[in-house]
Image (tube, helix red, strand yellow):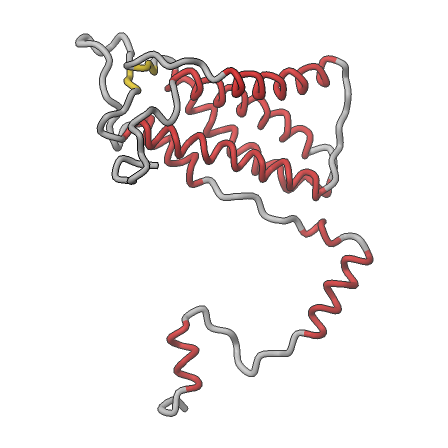
Length: 215
């Protein structure tokens, strides 16, 4: 929700602590998931997905160091517990030397969940920073007059825009490696009639072909 929404209550969309915790947690998980994806040829295509997301989160993390709330917010313990549980479980698996190899469809589900969390983090934090009555300020010591607003076009805003615009994962070709899946795909292709002319992505161009004025 943004300020001109009728249901907007003016409350902060995300606090400084929430932003820092989610960024640190997702950065750690992206690094772990990248290593996990690299263990099998069928899931290796996801390595670049997690690496790219981790690179943006790594750039974002130090920029949140001095972020402060104008009005202190009560910590969302449910969020802390959930993120802490996920990160602690992954760390415990690493400490125990457990090697986890996921199937392509499982890795795709993991990538989609990661995309959803990081996309919502970037979108919510960027909206909160840019709205006129934002509860977040940059409290860096270099600002002699005290905490200041984060402006559009700043490095932090640009990094969040990069995070928001990262693409969602694509379904890998390895998803159709199963013989039954390949057969089903082949049957679908065989039953699909061939178009009389190459398809056009432009509706206007397609309509010209059927118009009484077209040749």
